[in-house]
Image 1 (cartoon, one colour):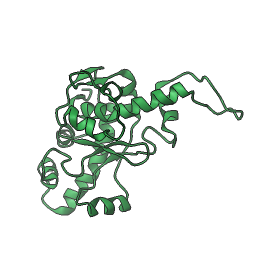
Image 2: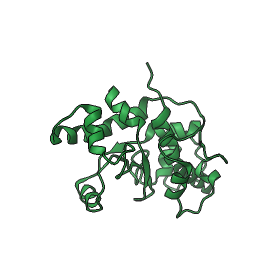
Image 3: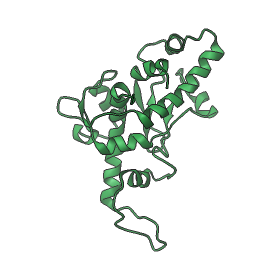
Image 4: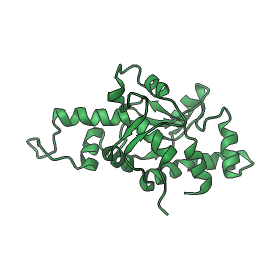
Length: 212
């Protein structure tokens, strides 16, 4: 982590990547809050040629992963700085969920719990593959780091199992072969927490602090 990388993290604008289960990703239009993301990267990292700027942008993925693993935030309610509560609601308009399900207070602040922060520790940011890059450019957007929408918290394609591990939920059921079988309540709770992670991750990038 460098001061330059942290300066961009603080300006991050997240949207929902709707691939698979959905996950946070940097906006392909205004990832750092301006209409000139290339210039934002150049100014942050002091690069002057395209190759160095591209390398700095791809490497920014590692800054996000490092920050998610090490930064600290106290549970509580927080106002988002870089997006609004209405922005967050629009990302989930297809879900027709109320504010409580999205993890918002009545005045539009984000509720951050210990469980959310444990999930933050487990997320892995990645740079899009070449096919996703081509698709993004075709829609006149910038390729940007994102959390894996299929495996946001580990290696399991059923992300609630990774949530089960990270949150240390009790094993209440097993299959005949001895594998963990989640209860309906655990599956629903995991889905709700996962939906809330877009707002939580936005607040985390804006406000969490690295240990000294």
